[in-house]
Structure formats: C-alpha cells, structure tokens
Length: 79
Image (cartoon, rainbow, N blue to C red; front, side, top):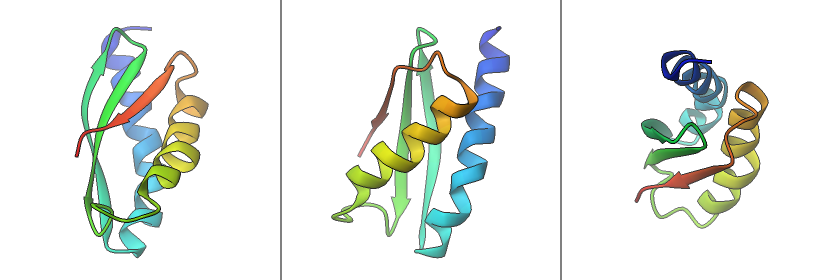
C-alpha cells in the first residue's frame, strides 16, 4: 500500500467518525501519518479539553482507523 492509499484509508475512517464528533460540536483533522504506523490527529471544537476525549480517541477514532488501515499501531492526539 502506498502512502497515498494509506492516507485515503485514514481519511475514510475519519469521515466515518466525524458525524459523531460533530453532533457534539467537535471535529477531527488528520495532521500526519508517520512511518505508516502512527497517525497524528487533532481533536477540535468541543472535543478540546473534553473529559471523555481520550476515551473517544482510543475507543472510537483509533478503532475506526485500525479497521480501515490495520497496519496503524497508534493514534496520537496533538492538543
């Protein structure tokens, strides 16, 4: 899989979870994919400083990204 194909898969994953975040006044942006193993994202809007954002990141975002791109090992939120 090329880096561009991986980026497309990660963006598809984010598009899948974005409506849930937006329903709570938040959003998410892809910042970078490093070594085809690590994804950096930024939670935005009401997701910033939200007490459940780490749970959202781990259970929702990371799980969805790994479903689309299983080679991703971790998802990091850049505050």
